Length: 147
Ligand code: RTP
Ligand code: MG
Image (cartoon, rainbow, N blue to C red):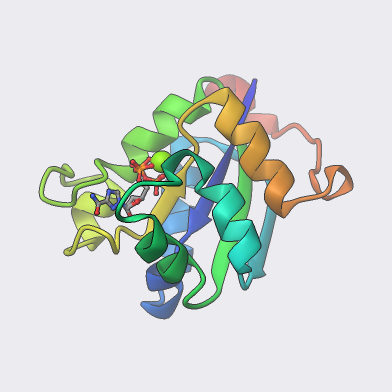
């Protein structure tokens, strides 16, 4: 079982898409293990996007992710890091397939609604940036064996 960090970005919160985005991951059969609404600090944003530090779009990225509250979440499931990125859709909304969150709801590329970790290492760093260990809840869903 793998865990990933998924975040409804400020555009998703402002557009009232929190519930519909969370539904996509529930529909896929993933398990929600932590969830909170937070205002990302500049320091947190820089840690979150550490792999993009130095790129020309880095300042815009930090500005955008701190521009309003987000919904920070930890989800669990088999191969969830790769699978959840398919649910999210391609980064560039012009390439995001219908049926994905970005393909169905996003129309301008930097405002692509949802973040998902890209590797187990990123997932660890991103989860620790937003959650204490005790905030992650361990439980089984009865239907797990049917998914
Ligand atoms: P995310 O991290 O948000 O889940 O998206 P991702 O892995 O699909 O994309 P990534 O390459 O990690 O980029 C992070 C976010 O930065 C913005 N971006 N802007 N050239 C650009 O202006 C550019 N490239 C990326 C996007 O908002 C992307 O989601
Ligand atoms: Mg990324």
